[in-house]
Length: 123
Image 1 (tube, one colour):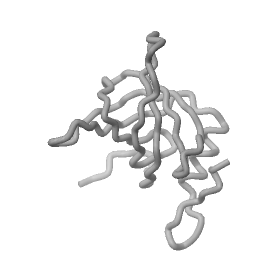
Image 2 (cartoon, rainbow, N blue to C red):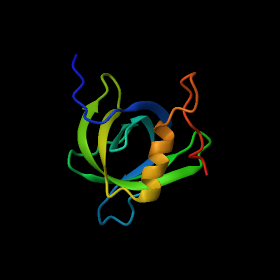
Image 3 (cartoon, rainbow, N blue to C red):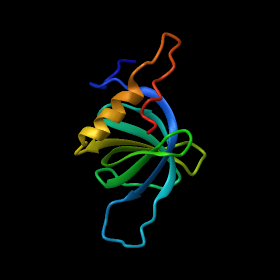
């Protein structure tokens, strides 16, 4: 199978909190889980359905649940996981700040030859 992505992704599992961006004041952050990340987007596993082209507010957390950064994203694709009430969701980052971009690059940077990722993004 040929890789269609223009930007490389790395496997990066961490907690994510997200919610739809809309005018609903009762719209709470919901727990999700990051599967992989690139400089332009992320794949998330969620119990909640979000429509394609919808906007979401994301908070990526470290493995110790410290907040790494918050960002707005656009849903690019949604795939229900077979036989489960879960969704695999592709999200494109929108309006990435310099600080968020720095933290994403730190997540993606290999820190040694064993394939371990750099943990310096955990402020």
